[in-house]
Length: 426
Image: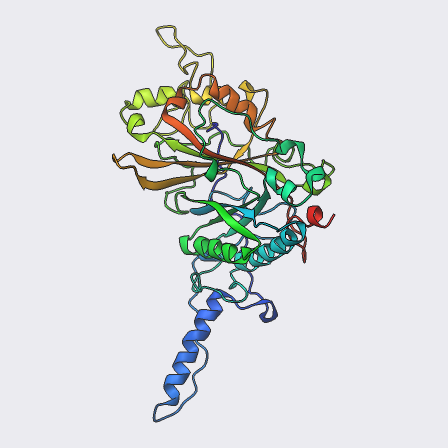
């Protein structure tokens, strides 16, 4: 879990959702208002006066519900947006006999559904009405391709070298059934029902073309739950992500996105997502004193400031020593080892969710981090940092990597197009 800062204030920079023209679909809010009005008119028709009622105006949404991310663009949604309160990660495998043609049709369906739902509209066809009275709620839906996808579709020559399988790490205890997959979908929203509605729509759209391989649920703090926007805390209670790259950084695009003239051409403006289910051994962690926890991380638990002093954003002094002559930030502290300047400049954009999947038979919590990180090349981003952590990170004894995946996430879909079109129709 590299020590990098998280994008701030989910939804803060997004425009409010415009009203969709009637020809493009009916919004979930409009459906609710129409249903209410119809019921009123029917009731009135049976009355003595027999009056006709005007359609009832829908109650305005709060700012949380109106916040909207855009589906079409240079990059896919769900990468540079701030952390979202609810999330679902899912992987699908193409069905037996399904190939490039079926994959293209599926991505076309998925993209159309994502565009509608992110605009706050109902899904086409038989919508479940789960999110009928909600707005867009910052919904994002992101699609990616796994290593095996290219074999299944006969596109091996288009498989990027950056998608080569990740190396083994000593902290790995991977469940193969919950790892990898032909297709990957990331869903995030600031409302739980909106996120679930999208997950169900995506699953239904898969039809006979693909089957669900694995699915995981995550969460983050809800927007507005703190007095001011702040870096998130993980389930260990630590402020997690202080040194995350920011879109305003001069080298952000170079580190996170494949350049427009990069190879393969279909990955232009795309990125690579490393997905890891990292279980936190909370019973062992919580036995440590706060001071011991801070030494493991290298930062104060209360405010995320480095042990060398200052505030959360103060540069860490790796050479500072205490009165006894020992380093103030221990040599094996997580934040020291994971720093880009300690890893040849390797950097990634971390955009995780916490998870809690209940308890084991002995009461041990099955909880931790659904780690998702983005980079232009995982062999220069995630891999060198994880190798360094593998060799001596003090945090390693308190976490366990239980599932893993690496996915190529192409650039955003053009208006009227779908995600992956350049690959599947190129």
